[in-house]
Length: 319
Ligand code: XIL
Image (cartoon, rainbow, N blue to C red; front, side, top):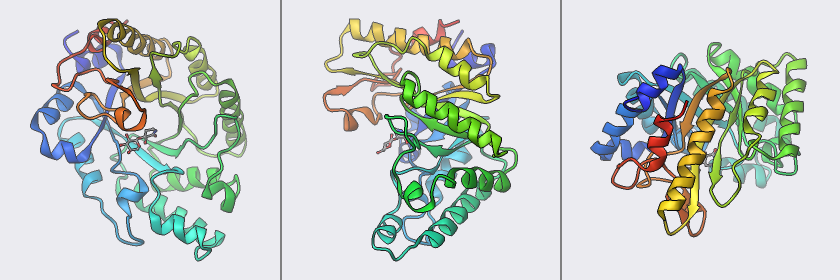
């Protein structure tokens, strides 16, 4: 196995990375490694609502387009991320809801138009959409959000139906973190999928973000969890894999990190329905981890100089 593309081909899966659109433009070495190694791309931020419609009715597609265009030129597929989330919403939307100038009926229309516009723009160019991101909380309840509060739980069925209408061939996903191990969350998602399926809502996949840290035990039941969703007829994807550590980096920590990455890939490979394994950034030069987890970092498979870490080699050796 020469590189990740080779690994992907030999195992019949897609291996992806999140992409920072600005860096894609400015750093040639980043671009070169991304396109050498990966068969699937997710825009790290460029397709989020605040990125594509920062002012109401003013659309800024340049970064999202650049990721899709890079994929087209390099034979990569794309995961659209994300249509509905409680974070990274544009200020005009959150403030309009907060001050009551946007009421429930208008909010529903805004959401419908958002989904139609964005999914429609990339029709045929996005393999899979994260339609709804992080809609269950860690207690196993539907997450409090402007969507749940003002539209009620039916917003999920509506969103998947609108997405299906806008691009009938795109695979439509739920996506979340801690579903690797949090039993309350797992049970709520399994129930949610069954409810949606009973209402004939078009849902195709369950995305496991896979944000792990070596200071926690590896989620040993993950493959079984994947299978429980696959048993409902869903496809599975690991959508945002990274393995952070408390700094400083040591050889022992890198070895543990390598083992976590390899186990995660092995878990995916052990489940027939798991056909995508995407990392949330491929280099420690550009990772969300240091900015979000104080004192932690080094979560990616290549170092800041784009040199392979033990985790990269461990992925290549996984079977
Ligand atoms: C993160 C990005 O990596 C950061 O650059 C941004 O500042 C915040 O969002 N779960 C998700 C991703 O679904 O969209 C998040 O991405 C990481 C957690």
